Image 1 (cartoon, rainbow, N blue to C red):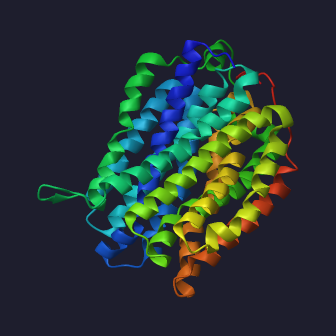
Image 2 (tube, helix red, strand yellow; image 1 turned 60 degrees about the horizontal axis):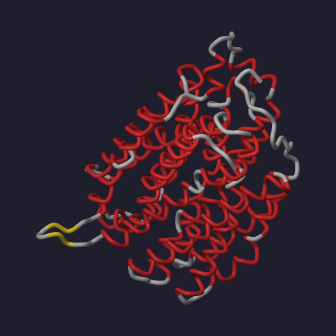
Length: 405
């Protein structure tokens, strides 16, 4: 895979944007129990913060995507990153649970724009033969962000510096870090060549493009609902499962989630690359099937080592399937709405899956705090659903991308 210097910088910028987006999001999942304790509520009530973040992402995907299709991928990506950085940090100052939930909803809007803008900028800027590997690499920004959140939680949380103890509020101040990526994008990343070329021709209306491609759009929303249930159903409450059901300390919880995200990185890179050989649909099918034999270890093992092994395999499956998605969705999307449609269908699917966090928490609470069944139920059912739904997908691997088509 030979990329120019500018293309490599574009990939790096999108990777960093998605990585730090995920870092901001996953800080929350380690802190649910402590936030619940401070506000004197159940974990399931704080889990609505996860629900609201996910539910509002489709709003951001549409708003920022439309801006990206009109004004360019690069400037709107910069605006989006600054927005989620600032709003994420403001959660540290929430005086009540309701204020905290409102800020996480606003964070969801800002977070929702990053994936569509970053993926369209990258996929329009690189050669078709590089899309599979770069797709996996780009999607690996998500587990790397989760891994960094795991490290930050293990190293910083409840640490004392002088008379100051780092609590959950101070952890959210780390959300300002992604804003630094904007400086890199401003200095080193060019605009999408496909977008720049499209400025010379009249643009079709969004509604006309969607009307002509409604079948692909509707199918993609259903597919992404399954995918978001797959990722969030295996990731968001897993630290809480380790904390509350197994009573592991923060160091153990941290290293188990680090191992899980190493598996996610392996899966994303491997299946993104192999999708260039066997096709996007086949790669996703194989990756999703790996989740099924991982279920007993991942949800029902009793020792940290076996749980870590299960988590490693499970995330190979989850992010292996996800690693193909940036390339696949952009290849399915019409050029005039490529900054809008992939991100919007992704986040619309996310909206349909967004109640998963409270759903799993309530299942666990209704059975005396047993998270194993809630986790295994969602992961197993959704893995099978993905295998079925993806077999109906068109395969457009390697097609030339332009904004005009």
